[in-house]
Structures are given as C-alpha cells and as structure tokens.
Length: 79
Image (cartoon, rainbow, N blue to C red; front, side, top):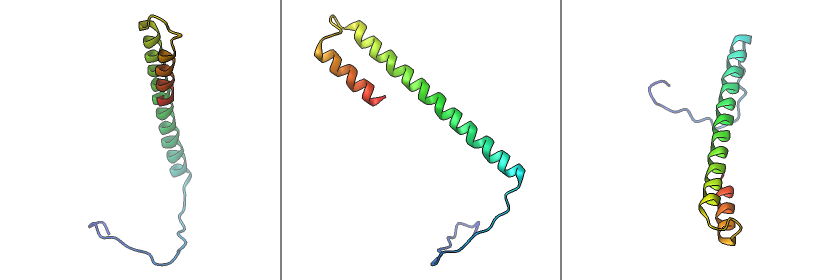
C-alpha cells in the first residue's frame, strides 16, 4: 500500500496494537509540545489584539465614543 493505493474496508474491524512505554512517552511528549506551541501562539495573538485595541483607543480623540467602542468590540471578537 506504499505505492499510493487505497484500501476500503466495508465492515468494522478491530485493530490491536502493542503500545510500548517508549512509544507512549514519545507520543505524550509530542502532544505536550504541540499544546505548548498552540498556547504560545494563542497568547501572542491575544497580546497583539490587545495592542491593536490600545492603539485604537490612543489614536481616537474620545475613547468613549460609541464608534470607537464598536471598533474595539469588533477587534476583541476577532481575537
């Protein structure tokens, strides 16, 4: 099946696999690293969104203006 062919299974089957402690540790490590990376990216995105909100408020003459508040709300929804 390494030549690009496909196998369609027409009925449910049970696949049994032996999971070694080494494989399990490696899988856990990869998952943990992936989660940590996603968390870092999310934190960075949230910070960038807050920076944009702060910039919009600084640039407006009246930060309490409803139009400014609407713009800030839209930015916060996107983040």
